[in-house]
Amino acid sequence: AYLRALAIGPERPWEARLPLAWLALVARGCGDAAECEAQLRVALDEAGAASAGPPAAAKRRKAGGAVVAAARLPSPAEREVLTRLLILLLQQNRDSDALPLLRQGGWRHRLARCVFHYPLPEPAAPPPASEGGGGAALPVRAFDEAMPEAMLRGLRDVFGPSAAFWKEHRYNSLSRCASEDVGYFSYTHELNDGPCRSTLDVAIRHILAVAMPHFPELKDARFAEWWAHCRPHASGHQMHYDSDNEGIGGARHPICSCVTYLEGAEDLGGPTLVTTQRLGDS
Image 1 (cartoon, rainbow, N blue to C red):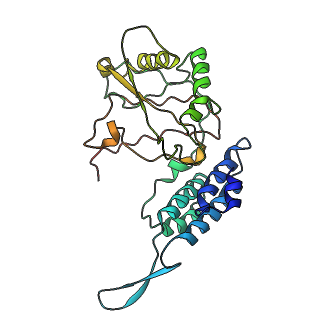
Image 2 (image 1 turned 90 degrees about the vertical axis):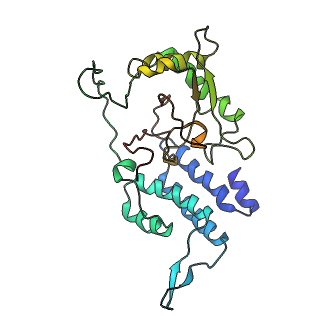
Image 3 (image 1 turned 45 degrees about the vertical axis):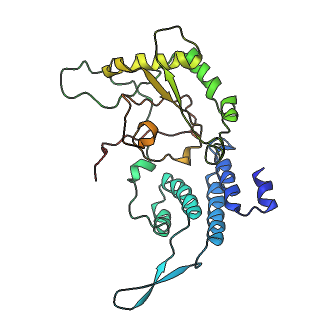
């Protein structure tokens, strides 16, 4: 369908080419990174050619009267393509290739190298849980094999790459993960002591039971907000603070945020990054 869209000649051809780039990553096992990069570079040229304004440089006058050339700032379309291409390059540890693109995009700072390019850990036994009493409580906990196999199979049926959930929500993992008319949204799930009503109800209560000994404030929880993603590894995810309604009207953080991985394929998802930065830090 995306190839046909390109053949027809849409007004914004890079929008059809971006899914082609992601498709190259997921179509054959771990994917074809070289083909993905090639498609992204073509999309970058297409987005640049369609952008308004001078094609290469703009003129600006300094206070002293001298006229100097200044690089044209990229259009929103170019920045979208640049972002995807940069994530791909940085994940391959190709900093020298990424640097001119970072400058082209007008970025002045980037995340550390270890955020994008990291060694995959060897399987190991999880460390013993702290008994408490000595030192501050850890703000982050990780649990391996936290779910019974039957529960995990049930969730994979609901949220697997070919599950009906994604089609019913018009979720497109090769594009922006949401349609223009439906958008992307989360669900609010009530927590109560009544009988379980669904596979998801069972899973949420199980996650709560696993987390509560380490985050005792969860005893006061009355609702759980949940959402799901199914994206190629190089998609990335915007850095954010978890907050009700995206922080609109002021930050209202959850008692505890939980990330549950249902699949471990190399071409899906990626580690969760947690930093020490607090809201209000410069």
